Length: 121
Image (cartoon, rainbow, N blue to C red):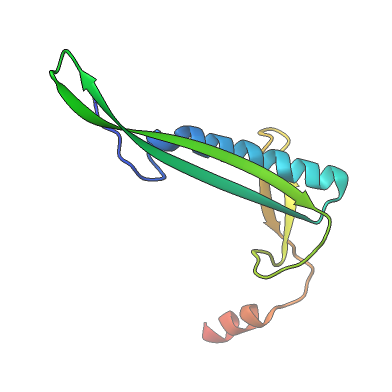
């Protein structure tokens, strides 16, 4: 049995934060589609507090961290873009899993990058 937890975003220590983010992302995308909202912000706040706790059975104090997270979503109707992840992808919903994914849009047009890759071959 492993009695340790690594402290990085991929460890089980932040499993609740990751599940919470996934749930907020999914709900935000669903609401944006339903209400035809063009912009939303998701904010993650992680607060860390340290506590010195004395354990009688160990006869010593231990430094115990506490991690508290808050994930919020705010939707806006305005459409202002400073930076983005986008392109030729369409938002799709996997009906079996309920998960959203992006699918490349194939419209028969060739992009500059596709031409570049063909010439490199």
